[in-house]
Image 1 (cartoon, rainbow, N blue to C red):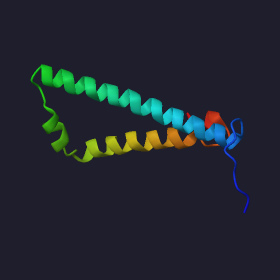
Image 2 (tube, rainbow, N blue to C red):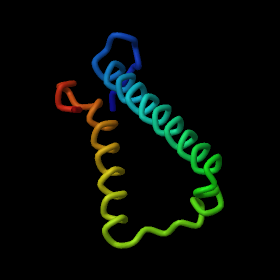
Image 3 (cartoon, rainbow, N blue to C red):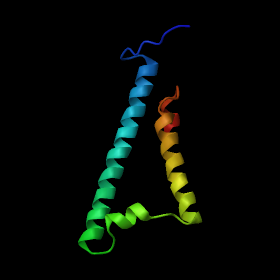
Length: 88
């Protein structure tokens, strides 16, 4: 079995780097938005972090959340495809 070398410039290393970059950008953006929403909610007395932690989605909300998760997974792992344009 041939070993894969993660040399910079190799197509597999490039795709893996794209995947990590896409995932990092997604995580950073989502964390920032979540932090802002929590701060605004607390500042206005609308919702506390405890309420967010206790939240359980109803059926349609659960479907929406699963759709978000599935889209993220498709975009992140899509970066590993041979054609980078397929990741979008």
